[in-house]
Length: 291
Ligand code: PLP
Image (cartoon, rainbow, N blue to C red; front, side, top):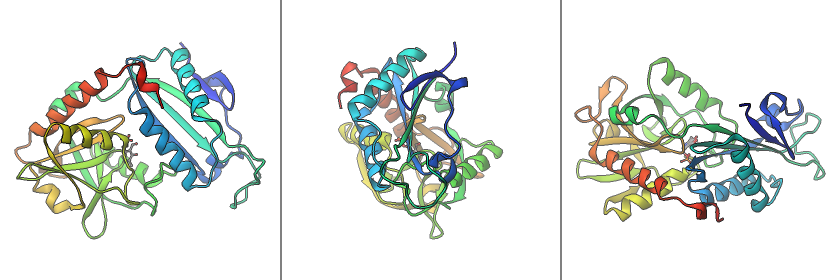
């Protein structure tokens, strides 16, 4: 079955779906995106993704190409046409097509939008059961990591370094040793006295939609959660380390560079949160679309 993409008002087989060579997303990475997990045909944290998408647009002074309601109809149609039951939806909105000049084009230039979908959600269960390895990399990104911009080159380079080291992800750190997040997921640790810690919301991290849900799930389960900065040193001495993200769910970390985390087995709290997150997904119903 060929994949169907939505491109600026049309549903097309992906092979026939193109964007203009003067699209500003292509020339300047002048665009934003979202990746949404579809579980049993319905979206996880849909409201959180819409809020973040609209925030990213507004921070970049970009207008939305359509209302939230119209976007929901497009996403539902892309899911239907691609027969997605468990998968991901990708939405990208660029500032539009205009002759190449750095400053914004005039108000008559319409933003461009692409929506695609893929089968398969979350990493295989066996990966989470074994736990994953991370490498550490300097965080070389810009000062607005809170915007989900398609300008992802530092993330790409960090992820490639992880791939070459046969690691799952790259843990990003600032020159002062602060861990911000990973290249495509949020980073967490559990202290020796069982407090769950993750970097506070700021311009230094992407406010993960999964991060917000896992904070809620953890607190509801009686865990103590702190949103505060932590260092690489603290991470290496942690009782547990884990990652969260739309395509990662909750992923236990068992090794960072050449050093194992605690006893080298996935942490019990991370596994518990992973199971609770899976239960949250399993409990989603059609009301998950309500924005
Ligand atoms: N941090 C970065 C840099 C990301 O790219 C992502 C997801 O792509 C995340 C965190 C996790 O965010 P979310 O849970 O919304 O997928």
